[in-house]
Length: 520
Image (tube, rainbow, N blue to C red; front, side, top):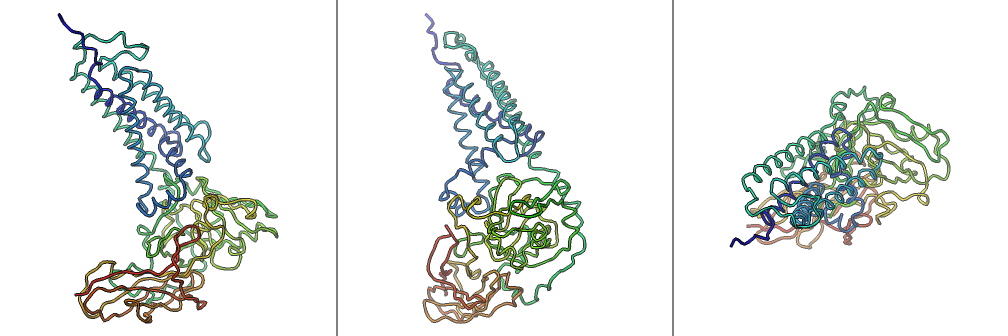
């Protein structure tokens, strides 16, 4: 007598594969649809961006410390792992209960659609990619179940099981391979088209007019050329990037506008051509992220070209009582700049070029704000489209809402670049070198301490401007043994860098950079 096999055809591995492939097709097709509807409507990036906004400050700081500029890639990888795990679990659970898979795909699609619709500058049309992806995922789910000989989705119970032997492994695997190919093709093509944008072509077409005020050239001795240190001017590709944009905004110059409004007498809107038709200035400015750790790398110097900010604000007529300028990015990010600093005559600008080239897309093309002396979260709004004159009481910017200080000047800092921490050196003359910074105050001295002894003066590179870092070098006669090297700087006002340790949150790190080396 033949015993009926009560197990579903193919067992749990079949269900896991069906769930994984159905989810992959849903995501791939959604990415492809987003390339047509608009990159900002990608449910994958929309969910990721929403997660970034909702992430607690301690977790964001951990991600930045751990992954650095790859924090967004780490987020996407983490999302992929979570989605894959969820799809596998749903697939296994749906082997006997097919509606579980249907409901799971619908819920995931709804989450993607709601996240896309809720993003700044998106409307209801942003739900289309997630919807199309969900439909594709459901179709794949039903088709693969049929190939596996599983109970049809419409059957509420397992009474209509296929006869034993109904599972054709070769038929199912060939169908799975075809679906995997579909998922990979739509995913890669969609990803490529979403990330590729007309903004790249727009950037390539930019021809900046003559610079009215190029400023002083960078002094020849500003860069000491010490091996192991970075150049005085940071190349664009090496410049640090810290922002909340999971997908770099694709903004074309010919469609960009800036609006200055709020507590002003004459609201002003200008486009890119009108902006660059104004007198341009060029200045070397060092930017620093408030999340930079002691000895960290979130700092860089570039030669920025742009339009002075103060004349634009004067033209708009900033009213008495304005204490804050809120800048908004095309992706909804906000920075809050003290109005008194933006208007005090320093080289605050709306930058359009970086080291002689139009701004890279990742650094704010077509226009970003640069204000010396303030951390980036207060001043360096990328992809800027709006400046609102207001007060601190009326509005808290993005990072202030998350607990960072409302107003803070860049703290005096210094870093040892060479030798590296933990290095093994030969006895004799060793060049200990690095950088020091105190933007808009300048650096007047740098000192090095060996093993807690007396402080000795280092030799400084030429000062470019008070808005840039200074390189320094100390000639050390290294003796055999283990040693600790510490650096400190004195700013242009005569204030010595504090040795008191403080974490970056909420107003910037303090403390002295110390390394350990071994000399043989």
